[in-house]
Image (tube, rainbow, N blue to C red):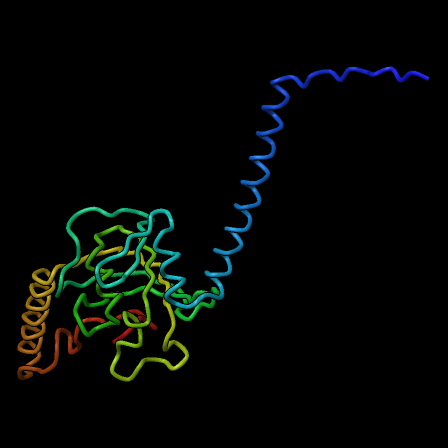
Length: 216
C-alpha cells in the first residue's frame, strides 16, 4: 500500500508577521499588567522610601532638593509667595491609603518658617496666585519635623495635600493694612474719648491659618 504525501501549503509571510506581532503584544501586555500590579503594591504597601521613589517618576511630578514632591495641577500668575507674605489657601490632606486627615478648609496662612510644617511652607513659596498644586511630604518635611512630633497618628506618615492659593498679600501690603487699621482704631478711640488701646489691628492680630491647617 502506498501512502500519498499531501504537500503542505507554505505559510504566507504576512501571516507570520501577524503571528509574531500577536506574540509580542501578548508578552508586552503581560509585563504591563505585572508592572502595574507592582506599582500598585508599592503605592499601597511599600515603605515610605519606596513609595516616594516610585511617585517621583510619575508624570508631572517634580522633586526639590529637600525631597518635597509636587505636581502643578493648575499654574498661577504673578510672583511667587515669599517669606512674610500672607497666602489665602484652600487645602485638603490625606494619607497614602486615601484616609483624609485634613478635611477641606480655607483661610489665610502666614508664609513664614515655623508657622506650619516645613514642607507646606516650602510648597507655598513655589506657588503664586491662582496656582493649584498637589504635594507629597516625607515624614521629615511633615509632622516628624515639629518639636512635639505633631498628632501621634500622623507621625512617620507621608502627607499628601491638594493646595490652591486663591489670594496673595505681600508683606508690604499687609504692613500697610495693619498701619491703616491702627490709625482708624486710634481715631475711633479719640472720638469716643478713650485712651490708646493695645493689641493688634481691631484689637486682634492677623487671621490665623485655616482650621486644621498643618501647623508647626
